[in-house]
Image (cartoon, rainbow, N blue to C red):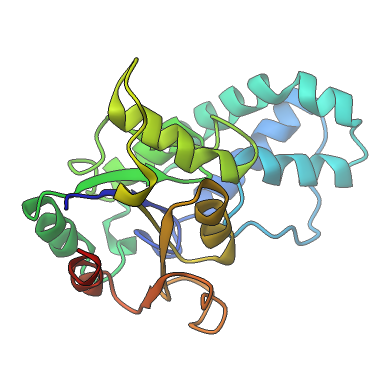
Length: 228
């Protein structure tokens, strides 16, 4: 059965490609709220851009109401900053075997899409600069610019994949693929299956709540075939 494959980006499709992205979020915070993001560590893996910026702003003492009121402006500023800061070539950051795996999955009739905490324009540019834009040029997806809560994103992606006015792609025909426990949690919140992949900061033990765990993207096709 053809499946809607909802890929995370950082740690899943790309490895260590977030430096300019982090700088863009910090630049947006300073532009919109007039404060500098602190050096204190804020967890980012698996979170949406809006959630990350909220944590940074709270550390700066910015009022929650001001954060809410400035969310759209901050998101826009981050996208503009990333367009300026993003390296021209991110191809060296593509996870091993990803292009070949995507070709194989597409050839098997599956539909690649995105479920990522990245703001959509950041996600699209990041993948184009990495040479993966041809698989994710447009179409369905769920993005950090859609909602601060990542658990909302798989449902958004299923609805978009079905098209306007149609019933969302059924839950049993969608799979989230990601490298963090928060990827698994967002899949569980929407009632879809999840494949964890160990190319990011988490090992198999951390990802054991997924329906399957793989070490390389090349293994995904076999997992899907086993579920058919």
